[in-house]
Length: 258
Figure 1 (tube, rainbow, N blue to C red):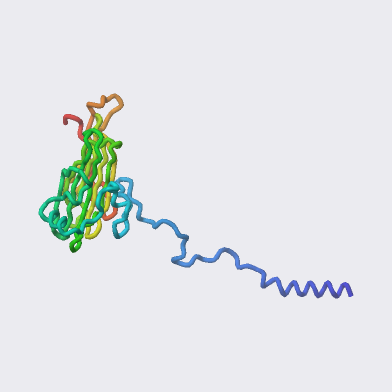
Figure 2 (spheres, rainbow, N blue to C red):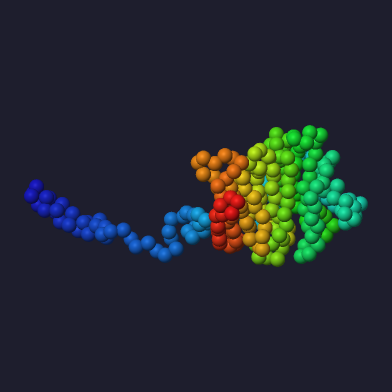
């Protein structure tokens, strides 16, 4: 009887085994089901000037960095009329002095300006702001502010076409001084309802300009024994906007005095 029970168990095991076997190897991945990650092919090449992240479709608090007491929008009829007459005071922080200004009426209404306030010329609060008008309301769409502790001595601005959309961009430089003329460069691009920073770099011994639709950078090149006053050469590089970044298109190094 015990032998018959063992034969019955063995027979049942043979019936179960085929259902427990696994197909050899892993299943072939189905197209479009790769693991989630960063998109490929979107990393800027090493020779590019990587832009800052693209903001959301509408301005967010991170895009509009203004002092706490500065206006974010203006719709009072008298103030709107004053702005139309060329007085930008209603758009600036209270007590601020306006420096550079640029007024655009086409293809959309936009006002851009630098400002500063404070009695100490070496410790002033300074900033740059982009405002756009929709109907009877002006709204700040982009701004940066430098606190007095940052030691910015001035903000210079160039205007020119860089992105191929026939809308001028703004190239700003926040000068912090020093023997190397140090500071921060930014490129701000505008579109209806939005302005965004597409480039930022802090440098010394460098000059950046808008030249014939390109971003041109001239940097001092020092050999190990060069004093700071006298670099051995200057490297001029030119960058073109490719829709995502400024990509190197040419460069040349010229000996100092050459």
